[in-house]
Length: 257
Image (cartoon, rainbow, N blue to C red; front, top):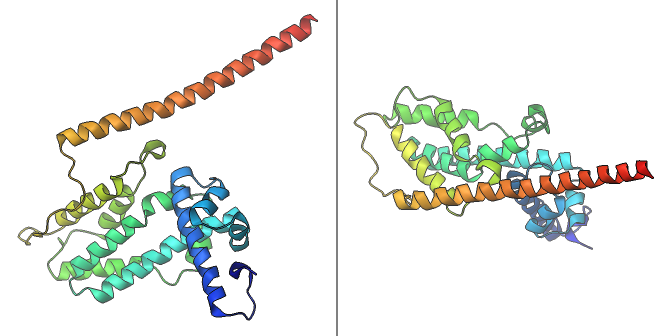
C-alpha cells in the first residue's frame, strides 16, 4: 500500500512520505497558482510535485482545500523565517535583511494575491502558529535602537516593498534572471533604509547587473513576448469570429431552404 494512503498504526517512514508528498504538492501549487492563477489544472500541479493526481486529491479533496493550504504554508514559512532571524542574528539589521530575502523567495506578492477571493482571512490566519507581523516589527524597532535603520521607517516600508518586488510581470511573463534581480533591488532598498552617517555594506551587490545594453535586450524581449501573447489572443479571436460567421451563414442558408 502506498505510504500516502495509510493513516493507521504503520511505521513512521509511511507518515514521513505522506508529509513529504503534501509539502511537494503545496510547493508545486504555489508556483502553478502564481504562474497560471487559482484555476490552473490540478494535473499540472501533480506533475510538478512528482505525485499522481489521486495522491493530490487524497491530500486536498477540494480545490478550496489546496488554496487554503498554499496560503497557510506561505504564511507559516514567513512566521518561521521571522522567528529564526530574530533568534540567530545579533545584528537586528542583518536579521531584518535575512527575513526580507526569505519573504522575497516565498513570493508573497504573487502567491497570495493570486488566491484573493478564494478564502477569508479567518480561514487561514486562525490556524497559524503565530503571526509574522510582531516579530518582524520587533526586528525593525531593535535595528532602529541599534542605529542601523533610520528612525522614521515603519513596518509597511519594508513589507510592502517585498510585495511589490515579488509581483509577476504583466500576463504572467517571466525571465530567467528576474528572481536574482529582485534580490539585488532588495539589497539596494535595504541599504537606503540606513540613517545618514551609518556605514554602508562593503560586500558587492549580488545578482546580475543590468547595464544599458542589457536593459535594451531585456526591453526588446519583454515587448516581443507581450506582442506574441497579444498576437495569439488575436488569432484566437479571429478564429472565434470566423466560426460565428460560419454559423450565421449556415443559419441564412437554412432559412433560404
